[in-house]
Image (cartoon, rainbow, N blue to C red; front, side, top):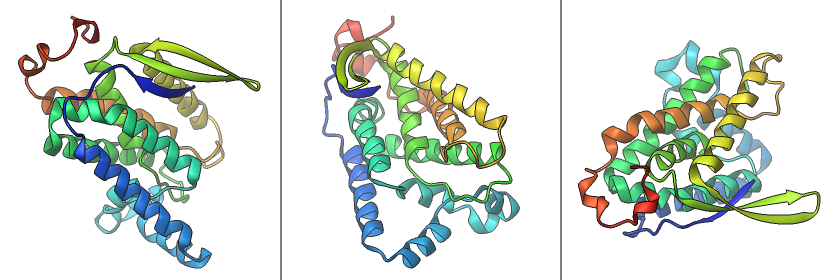
Length: 232
């Protein structure tokens, strides 16, 4: 289930979203040019390791932020940055650049903490922007539940394009994360595919919780977007 495009127009240039994508891309390009031993050292220093964070939080708290800008492979970063590109501009529109940046970072921190608390004994480094991006999805689904998202499904080898309401697309995505995270809790630590499912859940819920605090007053946007984007 791959989102391709939505139908909500952006009213302003999404400078923060583009900057975040650029920073993530630059860091990743630096990662792929490093020798293996240096890359491993970089990950040890900047990725989030739950057991280290919880045992010495005063020493390892910066990894809650630095880990957001590291990625483990091309598919990892492309998936995260495409999702941020697709949904971030509209959320940034509703918050403004400064509020949106703070919102994004707080969602990422919440995602990291959620992962650490649900896997406190894990010594596997955790990295990626997916927790922060999940927060963007949480805000988007509340702001534009009726937006239409063209979605690609791969049926064996055949592509299928379906237009889904945002509430359906993001709702299915969230339930998948919740189900996978619950299943992961029933298995041995670090044995469920290497995906921090609960980080996604935590970031998503934090995005929903923070939206009322960070969005601009509704009256400034009511006249600028067609009624079909709003649930009221």
